[in-house]
Length: 226
Ligand code: CA
Image (cartoon, rainbow, N blue to C red; front, top):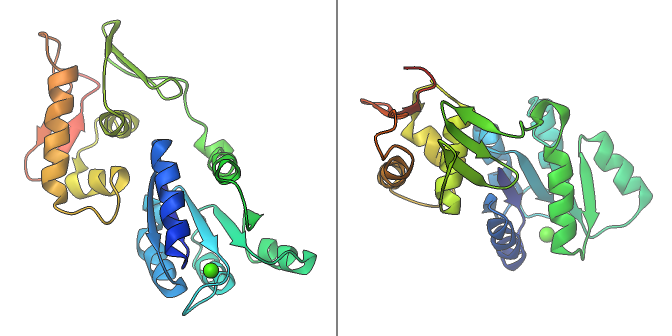
């Protein structure tokens, strides 16, 4: 899961990012409305939800929200607002917000709202992902191959989950990177290669059928069939 935070209070944006990171959720943040809108226009497919502050420099949250909805960007949006009037809330929902939180709020509320927003029917997660004898359970974060548990770091787990959700597709390094890592991270192709190699050594060792395949000039794919 990946979240975009549009919030000009950088300290708050950082707290949110760190809090989400602890939950295994990747987040990017931008500090003004104009940048936020541009990011969403170009990269909305990379994000599962947006946390959008209302009072922002350059373009306020409501303007950003209206602009992206006009362009049919349908990513769920959680509004952060310091205001507390009923009229504002209705205006927000009319403009296409999915939910809102009034500042100050607890991090646990943000997390709960984001979970609810990303739990839409079309996004219902299967209870387990299976390719050959490789099984990944998103909820418990347990991965097994041939019934034997494989210990993965959180990033390795996210990477494998992403690959398993797109079986038999040649996934580009850039695509893998933008779905798993922060936007600010650099030298993506190298990071992806390093993690793929670690993952490969964990899931494709011990004489098992090799599932993780390098696609020359593109990236990687997880093969469901021989
Ligand atoms: Ca603000």
